[in-house]
Length: 94
Image (cartoon, rainbow, N blue to C red; front, side, top):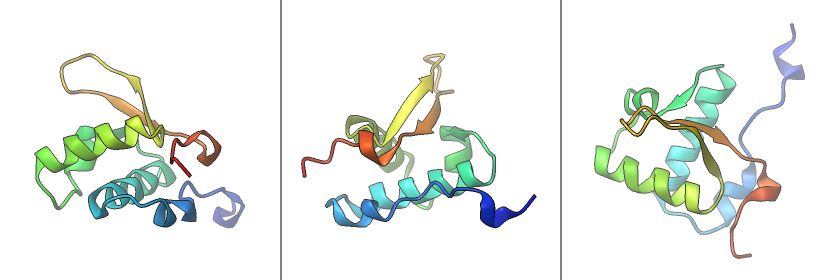
């Protein structure tokens, strides 16, 4: 398999829509997890997140509100699984 044939998750638009540094950082971490074939979960993100857990939760919620990240499975016990959405589905206000 050729890695250059695989579409990468990250879209450059993330840098031009006025998001906070934490939100952009979270998006990039989620893209990295997705590109590596890992699930996007709070647990997996916390292993590589440099900010506080409170900042992470706030950023997750903000990315969900903008439909950049979508919760696909939730057990309501903090074991949520997320999916990156297509850039065409983002709610950016632009």
